Every structure is written in structure tokens, then in C-alpha cells.
Length: 183
Length: 186
Image (cartoon, rainbow over all chains, first blue to last red; front, side, top):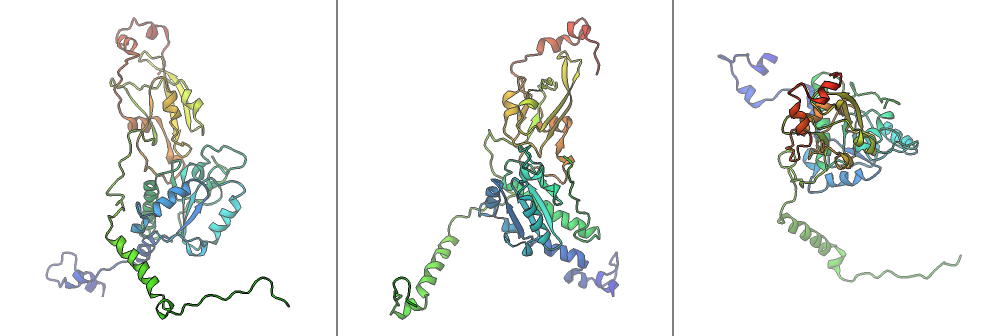
């Protein structure tokens, strides 16, 4: 059966019409293709970075070109959390809870200096990076980052998704652990 | 129980056309239709990029002068002035006639807020903010840029003043006071 599908390797004397009309793939890669082109972000807008996040969704940058225009304010419907802004210690439990409510597989982008590392708020009241509480896949520097940088981040998440599907690992595997108190 | 407030009767339209909401729908569709023919504003990002202004503040980088010398003299002013304390410097003695230079010069790009204070304070004009604005990273360690990476980002800036020209030129000869006096360690 598979020989019929793929034809012989050199194709000499074989009927190759099947290859011309049929595309074969593995199920995992097919699912990953679907997922990566319909990332639904959860806009965790906590500070001024959220303004750039909105700019990314607006017509000029138009993240709909990457299939990620459906910002879902319900965590149950989202699979990409964009933490945009300062995560204060008071807000941290809410961020963690919302992340936990998102269904697997899920990804996290730490947008901007505050969410990535605490930025200039070396303070008792601010978590020094959201990766203290949730695992972060992509870090974006900037204060705030340009919408282009955020688009780069989303494209990187799409590539991560592909890489994990190719490596025959479940979508959630290989995700970084929260670094805890490490600075 | 008596009613609270005044009872009002809602005005009901007698005209059957407005009862179907057809006019409202057509009005809305007319707006949509007009927008189809307006100029398109979307920038196709990875293919098209925004023209950043000359004074745009992106990631900071170290520069070399036209002689290929690292301009930083490890004075620690940028480390001192940096609001998020993103810069980490360790100094060393060097042999180029300028006595001191950075051994370690790390900038934590995730801490950096691109404020430009380092560029402003630098007495040697050795650190500049580039127009780089789309760098991303997958880990924190990856986003701490070492000296070599920062120098590669910054490239060469021609130095019109040539502040250290006398000392660095004399470096070739061994009788220079600086090179002779210091037990130079690399």
C-alpha cells in the first residue's frame, strides 16, 4: 500500500501520477500544521506592552495573516498566553490560575522586559520574570517591544510547534519548567 | 404594589420598512463596501519592514573605532547609570595604551529598557543604541549578550576626535610611559 502511495524511489518505470495528486503526511505533523495556523492568544495585558499587543492585532500589523487574530479572553478557548506587562506579586496568582485553566497544548510568550525578567522593577512587589510561576517558551526584549518583535515571537512559537511535531514529541513536551527563584 | 417611577410606552414604528431593519443593514454594509476600495494599510511584516527613524532606540551595542580598537575603557558609568541594572562589567588592564578595557561586558537584554542612558553617559562614545528591535530569545541565558556579541552588533564607528591617538600610536614603540610602567597583564 505504501509503495503505491509513494512510488519507488527513483520512479523508473513506475506510475507516478498518484504522487502528483496526493500529498501524504504524518498525523502529528498535520495536527501541528492546523494548530500553528490557528494559535488563539490569551492577551494577558498587564501594562503598557498591551498597547503594542493591540497594535499587533490592528490592521497595520494584522496578525490575522498568521491566523492568530482571535484573541480569547476566556482561557478555555486560548492556547497561547501572551504575558504583556509587569507581573506584580499580587497579580501573579491570577496569571498562574489563568494559565492552569488553558487547555493543553499551550504556549507562553513573555513580552517585554517586565514579563521576561522584571525589567526595571527590581522591587519587593514584582515577580522577577513571569517564568518564576509559569513556563515561558519565547522571551521578547523591549520596553515595550515593537509589534514586529511580537510577530517574530508568534512565528517562533509556530516554528517550535513544528519542531516538536517533527521530533515526534507530544506538543506539551520539552516545554521549559518555571525557573523558580533563579534570576 | 404600586409601580416605582413613571410608566412609559415605547414608540413603535408604524413603517414596515424600518421594522425589517433593512435600511440599517444596508447602511452598515455600505460602510463595509466603502472600506474595500480604500487604500490598504496592512504592512506585510516579514517581507516589508517599517522604516525606523534615525534616532530609534533599539538594543544597545558596543563599537570599535576606525583603528579596530574597542572604545570602551571600562569606566563603569553605564553600569552605574543603568536604571534596570542590565549591564555587568569587569575591567582588565590592556596593552593598547589606554590602560583599561572591559574583560567582561554583559548586557542582559531582557532587563534592558532601551532608555539610552548608557549612550548618553558614555565619555568614550563606546556604547550606542542600534536600530535592532526584533531580536527574540528562547531562554534567559541566551539573552545575556557577551562583549563579543555586542561588538559584532555595534560594528565600527569612525571617531573624528581621536582622543587616544597619541597613546595608541606610541604603543608600537616600547618606550611609552604607559606600556613601560605597568606590568601589563592581558
